[in-house]
Length: 190
Figure 1 (cartoon, helix red, strand yellow):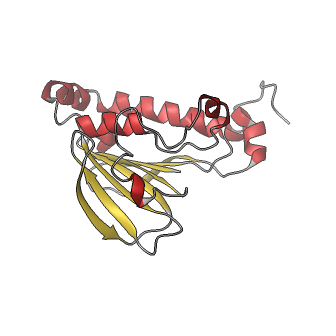
Figure 2 (cartoon, helix red, strand yellow):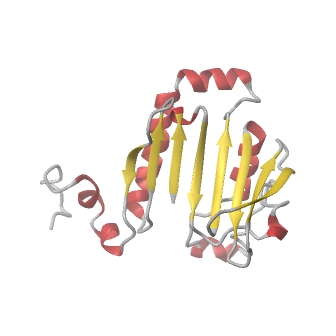
């Protein structure tokens, strides 16, 4: 999973994964409120094994931003790039060359709510740090590969978090992330 923030997320942020992609029959419903393709029955809550993109979150984002999704499944010869309106309806669809997986891009977060947008712009670095802290938690809890990058203005992309996918990382959590010199008094030190 790769997460990119441009201007601390005030211009845009995007999440890229190398999952299975979204099938074309789900394009219209993937951003619908109260929908998810990850759950079919209540017991499925116990066995979610991917981060995946959840419909309710996508519906909320489409209501307050400009939302674009680029996706391709292994069955697709070519991917699709979709744009959604604030009601979660596809407003534009075109073919796109891409790898298997999905990219969700959120442009101009809160632009439909001017007062909230101003507050967001005023606190952009603080909100960005909150997002990084959440992503750091995911990095410490999972064996997935996570890459978080940021860019301001026209600068180069800087890596904020980078992990490698491995079971060993998950077992050694804090020490693997911050290093044995800082973690001298940790119980997890090998």
